[in-house]
Amino acid sequence: MSLMPCLSYRRVSTTKQAREGHGLDAQEARTLDHVRTIGGYVEAGFWDDITGGGDLMKRPGMVARWLSRC
Image 1: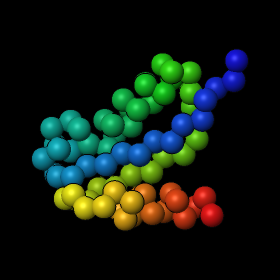
Image 2 (image 1 turned 90 degrees about the vertical axis):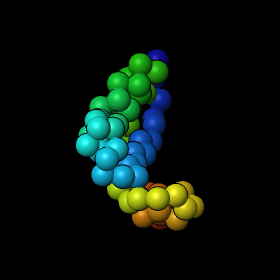
Image 3 (image 1 turned 180 degrees about the horizontal axis):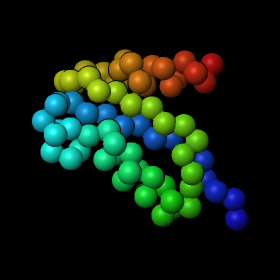
Image 4 (image 1 turned 60 degrees about the horizontal axis):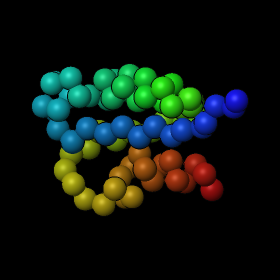
């Protein structure tokens, strides 16, 4: 059985979110646990630590990921 490639996107919106244990490092740990559970591996990871809503596809981490595929 081959492992399934996965992408990992992590994001925090506020400094409070990061302080309360939901920061990028905590999200990465949970993501890796989940990926292993489903029989996958993280092929690439990217993240954003900007605040607020807005268009997901225009966030720096997301833009960088899609540009790297070109």
